[in-house]
Image (cartoon, rainbow, N blue to C red; front, side, top):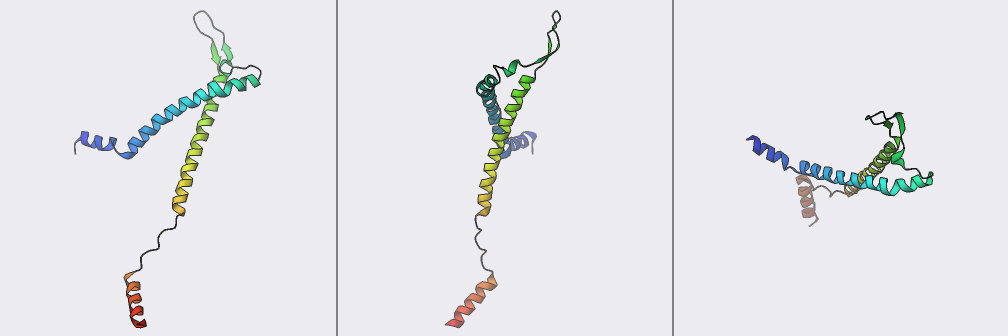
Amino acid sequence: MSMMKEFKDFAVKGNVMDMAIGIIIGAAFGKIVSSFVNDILMPPLGLLLGNVDFSDLAVTLKEAAGDAPAVLWKYGAFIQTVVDFVIIAFAIFMMVRWINSLKKKEEAAPAAPPAPSKQEVLLGEIRDLLKK
């Protein structure tokens, strides 16, 4: 088997394609969540805390000197990133929970009873003949 054919077989398998689609959708979902946190959630939260802009929250570790910029510890950006993570983690948790509930419903469906064995079929025929 040539390397190109082997690579083609690998690349077009369902799992690889599903993973690629998941990564693309995940990246887009991450952007949506970031925008939600930065543009929708944090401004009212900052307003409630006294007009605080979380992206500006920082501690100056070293002042700017000449051409060297100041060294900042940006804990506000970290808070926003943690909120992003919590929202994404919760959304993934809810999706996995939903998928697991679907799997449980499939497993809970009663299985069809197994077909009778040849011996049982023969015994049934003998019983029916004896009744006649």
